[in-house]
Image (cartoon, protein in one colour):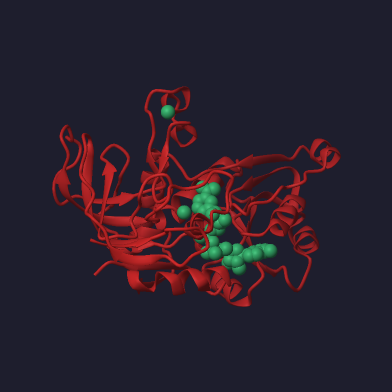
Length: 337
Ligand code: NAD
Ligand code: ZN
Ligand code: ZN
């Protein structure tokens, strides 16, 4: 099968023929149709994070495809079912986290396109219990970004603990941010969109942002404080440390900052302000299988729709280069055929 492979960090991915993986107990072989390109895949290809991915690696955790082979013991899926390959590739099912509906925190989890081979390929093998079921209303292309960008930002908004009518700021209107703002609107929040590129803010306006701020032109903390009195929740899905510092300072008293983007950096948090302002700072990692169903349901009902550019798998290196320069509006989805 054809696959895009990371052989070494900071090298171009190699698009080449590799063996179709064998299906094990409880697993399914999925014929991949599409796969979204997440900034995480760029971090993986660069080895940016303290925990490194496997090498060689087939990235991709927004994969959509069709079940083509069932491993022994699989009863929950049948041939022809449409499924998604997510970041939460598998978890142990037995630890405290798994038992309490926090399988995203399982210490034995595997991650699609990181510690397990993902969906930048014509085929992918995955555990039947953790693949997402794609609703009939969603096409193979439009479903892809929901599998990470969608579920991640939906979950982040849930843990922000805000209520309809509250103000939420989204820092970084990229692949995650442009769907974050749509979930936020669908959940009844008022939205401030912050980015450093005007095209992204134009898109944000089209998608219903109530206020947009270009943080390369004005101080977003001042703008947000002046215009809305600080936000009840800030979600940082940007890829630079600066945005996190600004997001923290944009939060009003009693509000929360949800940290989602993953630049390899420290976030210095002033103790005095955090205490006196009663601010909550939370990390949020993708979403559980239940969050995934809910996030897909929003999309199936037309409340959230990713803005998508399709590219063939062979173009992956060009796509990653553009992503690094902030030149992608919405999400790129790779097609395998
Ligand atoms: P992306 O490249 O599509 O978008 C990043 C956006 O941030 C771009 O629009 C860019 O213009 C903007 N940006 C850059 N610097 C900025 C600044 N100073 N202020 C405001 N905006 C700024 O990336 P993506 O696919 O949306 O992923 C974003 C980050 O989220 C990555 O670090 C990725 O690894 C991480 N991520 C985390 C999770 C999780 O579960 N926590 C899941 C998926 C992705
Ligand atoms: Zn992702
Ligand atoms: Zn577990």
